[in-house]
Length: 142
Image 1 (cartoon, rainbow, N blue to C red):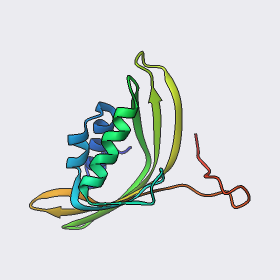
Image 2 (tube, rainbow, N blue to C red):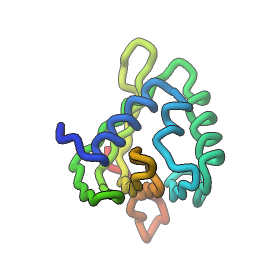
Image 3 (cartoon, rainbow, N blue to C red):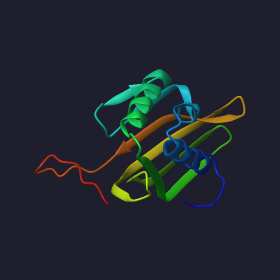
């Protein structure tokens, strides 16, 4: 990820830190109360911060002693005065308590941010992956 401190890069860095720390409050604080999420996992969409906070709590607690290392690659973004958007390839790597990489996957990630009360908040997020039309299965990069 670029070291350039755009609103998108700042949000992605904070996202990676909150996920690694399994900090539901820090994770939820990145998002607008009226956030709309299209997620790749288990549920078509999440609307509102409480639904998204609940998802994060379940995700983080399901990890046990493991951590998730999140890396964003090929980050592209555009920012105006009060709206910004960006996209990247995001890699999620499961890390054991002793630091061993257990598994990883990469999918596509797009976020839209709005500046409200001098703070940038994610108002929309979309994660996706291409689908193999013959098998109906998602195509993950590793």
